[in-house]
Image 1 (cartoon, rainbow, N blue to C red):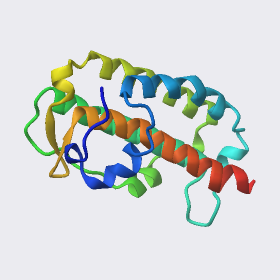
Image 2 (tube, rainbow, N blue to C red; image 1 turned 30 degrees about the vertical axis):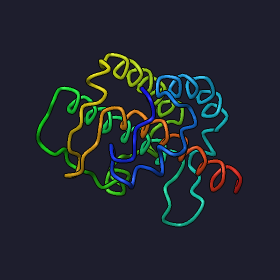
Image 3 (cartoon, rainbow, N blue to C red; image 1 turned 60 degrees about the vertical axis):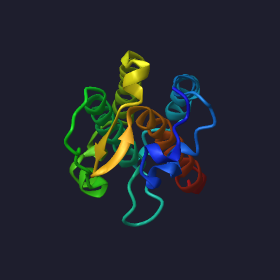
Image 4 (tube, rainbow, N blue to C red; image 1 turned 30 degrees about the horizontal axis):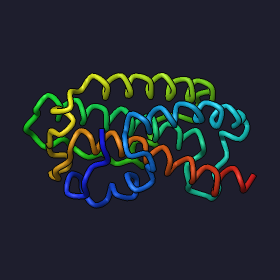
Length: 172
């Protein structure tokens, strides 16, 4: 899965895709799989309830956001790969976070869920043919390819790991 061209996804998602240094999404998924478990396991239960400012998500809520986005984007990729013709809906990330009850869960349950989910994401994307990866569909009435979604998923995690490092973990 080579890196998508900017005309294959809405400009907003360049903020994630541009963070992926690997030229191939499969390789990028594998690279993340090598370091992400250790990074997540280094965060303690006590740390996971930290928010760096009033009104900001806790680390648990941020992890739940990553999980929610992974599921939503995988659904979008599946729909587009199966040639869905309707525009797939957007979502309000703040409303999802508020309704998530993430702070009532253990940090381990959240990290275990993400790691399992990411593995199924890799399997899903490896199941798509080269042709299906290039299929384009609509999300929030904007064109996007299946391949672009794979890069968005990798870049989304990179983005939030950097947020965790800079705004959460360095402030504790």
